[in-house]
Length: 364
Image (cartoon, rainbow, N blue to C red):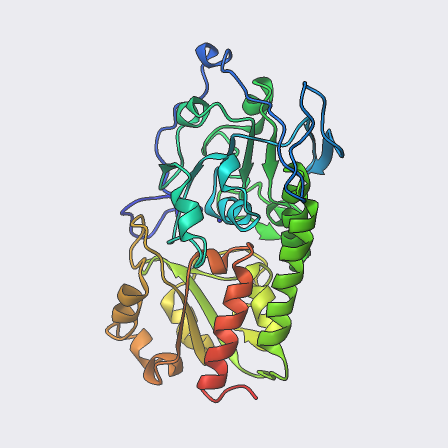
Protein backbone atom coordinates (compact mmCIF):
# COMPACT_ATOMS: atom_id res chain seq x y z
CA UNK A 1 0.00 0.00 0.00
CA UNK A 2 4.29 7.08 1.18
CA UNK A 3 5.75 9.77 3.41
CA UNK A 4 2.92 11.48 5.21
CA UNK A 5 4.24 15.03 5.36
CA UNK A 6 3.32 17.13 2.33
CA UNK A 7 5.90 19.58 1.09
CA UNK A 8 8.40 19.04 3.89
CA UNK A 9 12.16 19.01 3.56
CA UNK A 10 14.23 16.95 6.00
CA UNK A 11 11.84 15.69 8.70
CA UNK A 12 12.92 16.14 12.29
CA UNK A 13 11.82 12.59 13.08
CA UNK A 14 11.02 9.48 11.01
CA UNK A 15 7.62 9.58 9.33
CA UNK A 16 5.68 7.12 7.21
CA UNK A 17 6.07 7.29 3.42
CA UNK A 18 2.51 6.15 2.77
CA UNK A 19 0.25 9.19 2.77
CA UNK A 20 0.22 12.80 3.93
CA UNK A 21 -1.07 13.51 7.40
CA UNK A 22 -4.18 15.64 7.64
CA UNK A 23 -6.91 16.11 10.18
CA UNK A 24 -9.19 13.10 10.01
CA UNK A 25 -12.79 13.27 10.99
CA UNK A 26 -13.44 10.23 13.13
CA UNK A 27 -16.65 8.34 13.60
CA UNK A 28 -19.40 10.13 15.48
CA UNK A 29 -22.35 8.73 17.46
CA UNK A 30 -24.67 9.90 14.71
CA UNK A 31 -23.09 7.34 12.39
CA UNK A 32 -23.73 4.40 14.68
CA UNK A 33 -27.09 3.85 13.05
CA UNK A 34 -25.62 3.31 9.61
CA UNK A 35 -27.40 0.55 7.70
CA UNK A 36 -25.11 -2.37 6.86
CA UNK A 37 -26.05 -4.59 3.97
CA UNK A 38 -25.71 -8.32 4.48
CA UNK A 39 -26.90 -9.89 1.23
CA UNK A 40 -25.55 -13.23 0.07
CA UNK A 41 -23.02 -13.45 -2.73
CA UNK A 42 -22.29 -15.80 -5.56
CA UNK A 43 -20.25 -18.95 -5.33
CA UNK A 44 -17.32 -19.95 -7.52
CA UNK A 45 -19.58 -21.64 -10.05
CA UNK A 46 -21.54 -18.44 -10.57
CA UNK A 47 -24.58 -19.59 -8.62
CA UNK A 48 -26.39 -17.41 -6.12
CA UNK A 49 -25.91 -17.79 -2.38
CA UNK A 50 -28.84 -19.14 -0.40
CA UNK A 51 -31.80 -16.82 -0.14
CA UNK A 52 -34.18 -16.26 2.72
CA UNK A 53 -31.53 -15.03 5.17
CA UNK A 54 -29.65 -18.32 5.51
CA UNK A 55 -25.90 -18.27 5.08
CA UNK A 56 -24.45 -19.90 1.93
CA UNK A 57 -22.17 -22.91 2.17
CA UNK A 58 -18.91 -22.17 3.95
CA UNK A 59 -20.30 -19.29 5.98
CA UNK A 60 -19.84 -17.72 8.40
CA UNK A 61 -16.11 -17.31 7.74
CA UNK A 62 -13.90 -16.60 10.77
CA UNK A 63 -10.27 -15.53 10.37
CA UNK A 64 -7.46 -14.89 12.83
CA UNK A 65 -6.26 -11.63 11.34
CA UNK A 66 -3.34 -9.67 12.79
CA UNK A 67 -4.28 -10.51 16.35
CA UNK A 68 -8.02 -10.08 15.91
CA UNK A 69 -10.78 -12.55 15.18
CA UNK A 70 -12.81 -11.44 12.17
CA UNK A 71 -16.15 -13.07 11.37
CA UNK A 72 -18.04 -12.49 8.13
CA UNK A 73 -21.57 -13.93 8.25
CA UNK A 74 -22.30 -13.78 4.50
CA UNK A 75 -20.29 -12.79 1.40
CA UNK A 76 -19.88 -8.99 1.34
CA UNK A 77 -21.94 -7.02 -1.15
CA UNK A 78 -20.64 -3.50 -0.36
CA UNK A 79 -16.97 -3.87 0.47
CA UNK A 80 -14.59 -0.91 0.69
CA UNK A 81 -10.89 -1.33 -0.10
CA UNK A 82 -9.12 1.34 1.95
CA UNK A 83 -5.76 0.91 0.15
CA UNK A 84 -4.84 0.33 -3.48
CA UNK A 85 -3.27 -3.06 -2.71
CA UNK A 86 -6.50 -4.43 -1.24
CA UNK A 87 -8.49 -2.92 -4.11
CA UNK A 88 -6.36 -4.62 -6.75
CA UNK A 89 -6.71 -8.01 -5.09
CA UNK A 90 -10.51 -7.66 -5.01
CA UNK A 91 -10.59 -6.50 -8.63
CA UNK A 92 -8.30 -9.38 -9.66
CA UNK A 93 -10.75 -11.76 -8.01
CA UNK A 94 -13.57 -10.37 -10.16
CA UNK A 95 -15.36 -8.62 -7.29
CA UNK A 96 -15.97 -5.15 -8.72
CA UNK A 97 -19.73 -5.66 -8.52
CA UNK A 98 -19.42 -6.18 -4.77
CA UNK A 99 -17.26 -3.14 -4.03
CA UNK A 100 -18.74 0.12 -2.78
CA UNK A 101 -15.56 2.17 -2.93
CA UNK A 102 -11.76 2.44 -2.80
CA UNK A 103 -9.21 4.86 -1.38
CA UNK A 104 -5.51 5.67 -0.88
CA UNK A 105 -3.96 5.33 -4.33
CA UNK A 106 -0.33 5.97 -5.32
CA UNK A 107 -0.46 4.72 -8.92
CA UNK A 108 -2.77 4.01 -11.84
CA UNK A 109 -4.64 0.74 -11.41
CA UNK A 110 -2.85 -2.45 -12.47
CA UNK A 111 -2.95 -3.14 -16.21
CA UNK A 112 -5.89 -5.29 -17.21
CA UNK A 113 -8.10 -4.04 -14.38
CA UNK A 114 -9.00 -0.63 -15.83
CA UNK A 115 -12.56 -1.49 -16.86
CA UNK A 116 -13.38 -3.23 -13.60
CA UNK A 117 -11.85 -0.42 -11.57
CA UNK A 118 -13.96 2.15 -13.43
CA UNK A 119 -17.08 0.47 -12.05
CA UNK A 120 -16.08 1.22 -8.45
CA UNK A 121 -16.31 4.65 -6.85
CA UNK A 122 -12.99 6.14 -5.78
CA UNK A 123 -13.70 7.74 -2.41
CA UNK A 124 -10.36 9.56 -2.26
CA UNK A 125 -6.89 9.41 -3.78
CA UNK A 126 -5.52 9.54 -0.24
CA UNK A 127 -7.18 8.44 3.02
CA UNK A 128 -10.96 8.81 2.70
CA UNK A 129 -12.65 10.20 5.79
CA UNK A 130 -14.43 7.72 8.03
CA UNK A 131 -17.75 9.40 7.27
CA UNK A 132 -17.23 9.04 3.52
CA UNK A 133 -16.50 5.34 3.95
CA UNK A 134 -19.57 4.84 6.10
CA UNK A 135 -21.74 6.79 3.65
CA UNK A 136 -21.26 3.85 1.26
CA UNK A 137 -22.96 1.57 3.85
CA UNK A 138 -20.09 -0.94 3.83
CA UNK A 139 -20.44 -4.49 5.03
CA UNK A 140 -16.67 -5.15 4.95
CA UNK A 141 -13.50 -3.04 4.81
CA UNK A 142 -9.96 -4.14 3.96
CA UNK A 143 -6.64 -2.34 4.31
CA UNK A 144 -3.07 -3.04 3.23
CA UNK A 145 -1.42 -1.12 6.07
CA UNK A 146 -2.02 -0.92 9.81
CA UNK A 147 -1.64 2.87 9.54
CA UNK A 148 -4.83 2.97 7.47
CA UNK A 149 -6.83 1.25 10.21
CA UNK A 150 -5.56 3.58 12.91
CA UNK A 151 -6.37 6.90 14.50
CA UNK A 152 -4.11 8.70 12.04
CA UNK A 153 -5.59 6.92 9.03
CA UNK A 154 -9.22 6.29 8.10
CA UNK A 155 -10.37 5.03 11.52
CA UNK A 156 -9.26 2.45 14.11
CA UNK A 157 -10.46 -1.10 13.59
CA UNK A 158 -12.38 -0.95 16.84
CA UNK A 159 -14.60 1.83 15.55
CA UNK A 160 -15.60 -0.23 12.53
CA UNK A 161 -16.17 -3.23 14.81
CA UNK A 162 -18.43 -1.15 17.06
CA UNK A 163 -20.63 -0.50 14.02
CA UNK A 164 -20.69 -4.17 13.06
CA UNK A 165 -18.41 -3.71 10.03
CA UNK A 166 -15.80 -6.50 9.80
CA UNK A 167 -12.31 -5.18 8.99
CA UNK A 168 -9.37 -7.00 7.47
CA UNK A 169 -5.67 -6.06 7.52
CA UNK A 170 -3.08 -7.52 5.16
CA UNK A 171 -0.98 -10.14 6.99
CA UNK A 172 2.09 -8.78 5.19
CA UNK A 173 1.91 -5.66 7.35
CA UNK A 174 1.62 -7.42 10.69
CA UNK A 175 3.22 -10.88 10.50
CA UNK A 176 6.84 -10.54 11.60
CA UNK A 177 6.61 -6.74 11.61
CA UNK A 178 6.82 -4.12 14.35
CA UNK A 179 4.67 -1.08 13.60
CA UNK A 180 4.99 0.54 17.02
CA UNK A 181 7.27 3.39 15.89
CA UNK A 182 6.49 6.59 13.99
CA UNK A 183 7.84 5.45 10.63
CA UNK A 184 6.97 2.53 8.38
CA UNK A 185 7.91 -0.14 10.89
CA UNK A 186 10.66 -2.73 10.90
CA UNK A 187 10.75 -6.40 9.99
CA UNK A 188 11.37 -8.79 12.85
CA UNK A 189 11.08 -11.61 10.31
CA UNK A 190 12.07 -11.48 6.66
CA UNK A 191 9.03 -11.03 4.42
CA UNK A 192 8.21 -13.65 1.81
CA UNK A 193 5.32 -13.87 -0.64
CA UNK A 194 3.53 -16.28 1.70
CA UNK A 195 1.48 -13.60 3.56
CA UNK A 196 0.59 -11.95 0.24
CA UNK A 197 -0.74 -15.25 -1.07
CA UNK A 198 -2.48 -15.77 2.28
CA UNK A 199 -4.23 -12.41 1.83
CA UNK A 200 -5.45 -13.42 -1.63
CA UNK A 201 -6.81 -16.71 -0.31
CA UNK A 202 -8.45 -15.17 2.75
CA UNK A 203 -10.16 -12.41 0.81
CA UNK A 204 -11.37 -15.00 -1.67
CA UNK A 205 -12.83 -17.03 1.24
CA UNK A 206 -14.51 -13.93 2.69
CA UNK A 207 -16.27 -13.33 -0.62
CA UNK A 208 -17.15 -17.00 -1.11
CA UNK A 209 -14.90 -17.47 -4.15
CA UNK A 210 -12.01 -19.61 -2.84
CA UNK A 211 -11.29 -21.24 -6.21
CA UNK A 212 -10.61 -17.82 -7.71
CA UNK A 213 -8.10 -17.19 -4.95
CA UNK A 214 -6.23 -20.42 -5.64
CA UNK A 215 -6.19 -19.67 -9.35
CA UNK A 216 -4.76 -16.19 -8.77
CA UNK A 217 -2.06 -17.51 -6.42
CA UNK A 218 -1.08 -20.16 -8.98
CA UNK A 219 -0.82 -17.48 -11.67
CA UNK A 220 1.35 -15.24 -9.49
CA UNK A 221 3.70 -18.09 -8.59
CA UNK A 222 3.99 -19.10 -12.22
CA UNK A 223 4.93 -15.54 -13.19
CA UNK A 224 7.71 -15.43 -10.58
CA UNK A 225 9.06 -18.78 -11.77
CA UNK A 226 9.03 -17.66 -15.40
CA UNK A 227 10.70 -14.31 -14.66
CA UNK A 228 13.54 -15.82 -12.65
CA UNK A 229 14.14 -19.02 -14.60
CA UNK A 230 17.86 -19.43 -15.18
CA UNK A 231 18.62 -15.96 -13.82
CA UNK A 232 21.77 -15.38 -11.76
CA UNK A 233 22.35 -11.81 -10.54
CA UNK A 234 24.73 -12.66 -7.73
CA UNK A 235 27.01 -9.78 -6.80
CA UNK A 236 24.75 -7.13 -8.35
CA UNK A 237 23.98 -4.33 -5.89
CA UNK A 238 20.46 -2.88 -6.02
CA UNK A 239 19.11 0.23 -4.34
CA UNK A 240 15.35 0.84 -4.07
CA UNK A 241 14.25 4.50 -3.84
CA UNK A 242 10.59 5.06 -3.12
CA UNK A 243 10.22 8.83 -2.66
CA UNK A 244 11.61 12.14 -1.37
CA UNK A 245 14.83 13.70 -2.64
CA UNK A 246 15.58 15.70 0.54
CA UNK A 247 15.53 12.75 2.93
CA UNK A 248 15.05 9.77 0.59
CA UNK A 249 13.20 6.65 1.61
CA UNK A 250 15.31 3.64 0.66
CA UNK A 251 14.32 0.01 1.12
CA UNK A 252 15.76 -1.98 3.99
CA UNK A 253 16.54 -5.65 3.78
CA UNK A 254 13.35 -7.39 4.47
CA UNK A 255 10.20 -5.93 2.95
CA UNK A 256 8.81 -6.28 -0.59
CA UNK A 257 12.06 -5.12 -2.26
CA UNK A 258 13.81 -7.84 -0.25
CA UNK A 259 11.46 -10.39 -1.81
CA UNK A 260 12.48 -9.19 -5.27
CA UNK A 261 16.18 -9.14 -4.41
CA UNK A 262 16.15 -12.71 -3.10
CA UNK A 263 14.16 -14.02 -6.04
CA UNK A 264 16.77 -12.50 -8.38
CA UNK A 265 19.76 -13.67 -6.37
CA UNK A 266 21.04 -10.08 -6.19
CA UNK A 267 22.02 -7.89 -3.21
CA UNK A 268 20.31 -4.90 -1.61
CA UNK A 269 23.00 -2.33 -0.73
CA UNK A 270 21.05 -1.49 2.44
CA UNK A 271 20.44 -5.05 3.59
CA UNK A 272 22.02 -4.16 6.95
CA UNK A 273 18.83 -2.46 8.21
CA UNK A 274 15.56 -4.17 9.03
CA UNK A 275 13.62 -0.89 8.91
CA UNK A 276 11.02 -1.07 6.18
CA UNK A 277 11.84 2.29 4.55
CA UNK A 278 14.61 4.13 6.41
CA UNK A 279 15.51 7.67 5.40
CA UNK A 280 19.15 7.67 4.25
CA UNK A 281 21.33 10.61 3.19
CA UNK A 282 22.91 10.75 -0.25
CA UNK A 283 26.46 10.62 1.07
CA UNK A 284 25.74 7.20 2.54
CA UNK A 285 24.18 6.13 -0.75
CA UNK A 286 27.35 7.22 -2.54
CA UNK A 287 29.45 5.08 -0.20
CA UNK A 288 27.37 2.00 -1.12
CA UNK A 289 27.46 2.92 -4.86
CA UNK A 290 24.74 0.57 -6.22
CA UNK A 291 25.01 -1.05 -9.65
CA UNK A 292 21.32 -0.48 -10.36
CA UNK A 293 18.75 2.01 -9.05
CA UNK A 294 15.18 0.71 -8.73
CA UNK A 295 13.04 3.83 -8.74
CA UNK A 296 9.46 4.33 -7.63
CA UNK A 297 7.44 6.03 -10.38
CA UNK A 298 4.54 7.50 -8.40
CA UNK A 299 1.71 9.66 -9.71
CA UNK A 300 0.64 11.14 -6.36
CA UNK A 301 2.00 14.52 -5.22
CA UNK A 302 2.80 14.40 -1.52
CA UNK A 303 6.61 14.31 -1.47
CA UNK A 304 9.54 15.76 -3.36
CA UNK A 305 10.59 13.73 -6.42
CA UNK A 306 7.56 11.45 -6.68
CA UNK A 307 7.71 10.60 -10.38
CA UNK A 308 10.59 8.68 -11.92
CA UNK A 309 11.23 11.62 -14.26
CA UNK A 310 11.83 13.96 -11.33
CA UNK A 311 13.93 11.40 -9.49
CA UNK A 312 16.20 10.88 -12.49
CA UNK A 313 16.52 14.64 -13.06
CA UNK A 314 17.61 14.99 -9.45
CA UNK A 315 20.09 12.10 -9.65
CA UNK A 316 21.74 13.44 -12.79
CA UNK A 317 22.12 16.99 -11.47
CA UNK A 318 23.06 16.52 -7.80
CA UNK A 319 26.83 16.76 -7.20
CA UNK A 320 26.87 13.60 -5.07
CA UNK A 321 24.46 11.36 -6.96
CA UNK A 322 25.65 12.20 -10.47
CA UNK A 323 28.84 10.23 -9.70
CA UNK A 324 27.01 7.02 -8.78
CA UNK A 325 27.81 4.06 -11.03
CA UNK A 326 24.12 3.41 -11.69
CA UNK A 327 23.58 7.05 -12.66
CA UNK A 328 26.64 7.30 -14.92
CA UNK A 329 25.56 4.13 -16.72
CA UNK A 330 21.86 5.06 -16.59
CA UNK A 331 20.89 1.77 -15.02
CA UNK A 332 17.40 2.66 -13.90
CA UNK A 333 14.46 0.32 -13.31
CA UNK A 334 11.14 2.13 -13.00
CA UNK A 335 8.51 0.50 -10.80
CA UNK A 336 5.09 1.54 -9.60
CA UNK A 337 4.83 2.33 -5.91
CA UNK A 338 2.56 -0.66 -5.51
CA UNK A 339 5.20 -3.00 -6.91
CA UNK A 340 7.49 -1.81 -4.10
CA UNK A 341 4.85 -2.61 -1.46
CA UNK A 342 4.00 -6.14 -0.32
CA UNK A 343 1.10 -6.70 -2.70
CA UNK A 344 0.30 -8.88 -5.68
CA UNK A 345 2.22 -6.30 -7.72
CA UNK A 346 5.46 -7.31 -6.02
CA UNK A 347 5.40 -10.03 -8.68
CA UNK A 348 5.31 -7.27 -11.28
CA UNK A 349 8.42 -5.88 -9.61
CA UNK A 350 10.22 -9.22 -9.86
CA UNK A 351 9.40 -9.41 -13.57
CA UNK A 352 10.49 -5.88 -14.39
CA UNK A 353 13.74 -5.89 -12.41
CA UNK A 354 14.66 -9.32 -13.82
CA UNK A 355 14.07 -8.10 -17.39
CA UNK A 356 16.20 -4.99 -16.84
CA UNK A 357 19.08 -6.89 -15.25
CA UNK A 358 19.19 -9.08 -18.33
CA UNK A 359 19.02 -5.99 -20.56
CA UNK A 360 21.89 -4.38 -18.65
CA UNK A 361 23.96 -7.53 -19.05
CA UNK A 362 24.15 -8.00 -15.30
CA UNK A 363 22.34 -11.35 -15.11
CA UNK A 364 22.53 -14.56 -17.04
